[in-house]
Length: 327
Image (cartoon, rainbow, N blue to C red; front, side):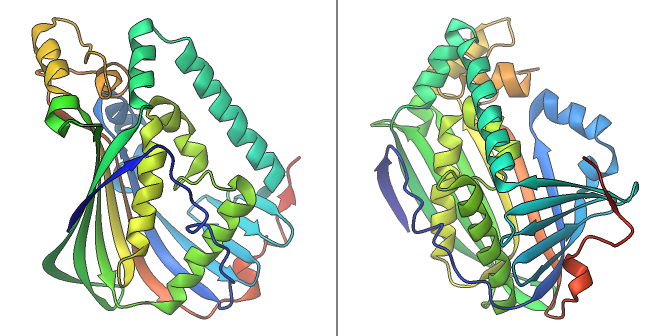
């Protein structure tokens, strides 16, 4: 099915409604994050095994606490205390930040990114202004018929595609962005609802209605691509309408040059991608080496549930007794 929606700002009150966290759950999960272009190549080369193969972690929710533990680091969020404990398992240390501290850090990051955008070249400023204008969104949901077993559950593949394009123009004419979410949905897994409920409560407590999957990492992305936050929010709302629980989700965010931008890029001997919605991609993200492409990957993320357990010990969500606080 397909529908067109004209949006200037998307309200998130319904998305961020505060569900009650009632049950315990523990999962093993794997996450990968990939940037496109030259910057992505640098991350793959210097980011180590985690950047190339992804990161596995254990996530546990018990009461008002959620703990996420990786090989060398961990994080414990306490909704009651409104505190976040960041753990360094190698040094056996932890640091404490309040929700207010995290909110202030995010606002500072946004302000710095906005300042960098303001100090950008004239053509880059024009690109930002154009990217922030009103867009039209086309939404397409497709059941592919493919099935796959994940974490002991039978899942079906659903592809949700959202296109943000210049008002009154096709994507090829005016350029824009495409966000594709490929999901493997199992019948509703009640235990995993607790993870989503906890995360929504945390996001609301810290950021209010400013929702992006990872606010700290995405501050710069929001400044370079103002439409990213809008599309991510709308995508989350559309995902919520689907029947089932996503055990694996891959999100691909792409920038698309307009016909004029592509023509200019092909004629130019420089690495610039031209102005407009996708123009900054060539300079800031992709490096635009070789022949210009009409569509360029900005980022790709994959999150997969490896196992689910409903038995959680107090120790699973506590700072180990032999850890010391680092001020």
